[in-house]
Image 1 (cartoon, rainbow, N blue to C red):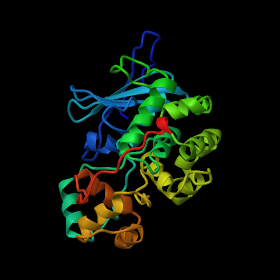
Image 2 (image 1 turned 180 degrees about the vertical axis):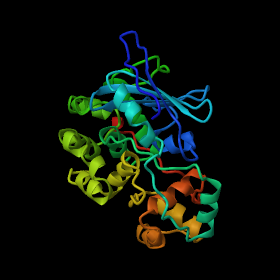
Image 3 (image 1 turned 90 degrees about the vertical axis):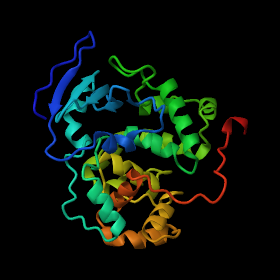
Length: 313
């Protein structure tokens, strides 16, 4: 960061800094994995090109706004967590991502790497805000998970600090999650298994933040000590919290087929995916990210999976 922060005032004056990346940077592409659907209450990208993020930090809630009028990224932040969010901007935008030992073993991967030199893996440095939506996404459709995420943020998250776009909320804190009554979980469409995992994670939230410091497999293993957090959930958090380039979302409904059809022209299961991606270690997730960013998808052969309505059960 090239400029010192100014302190936010009671009149919602932002703290501000500028960051000039020393590498090609696609801001929208780097931040895309943080967005949980078009109407995510904690993430917005407005028509003027500003990206807004609401988050919980060690110092409290905060809002971060990023704009890039030229070569530098201008960052503004509000709330008790403003300084922490500004401190994290370089890592958030991929400044700590190191792909210097990456080798492409497939022509498509080599082509995508050549076409997308500005795609990097960002790191929020925070675990809790990523755990909640990742647990909500366990074994349900994206539509179901996003609806539950919006509902929990709107009813149990604080209003995002600052002059934010309408409806922005900070994700619910561990204390807020522990306050949710059974009927309110039901209203949000969250079944018993995911509810229990969220409650267990809320009880362990403080120690789980250490995963972002441990990083890699040790960090993922720490997350998996919580009942209800398995390989898939730990990988989804690791990819975003510390930019884990090797964290594969084993158990994902779509990713093995995406990898299989993209690289071999046929469907794969988890075992086959891991075999195909093995030469890319420690950058297996980076390959998946290239494929996702390029819009590669598996062929559709049947009807979409129908979401369940737990409010009627």
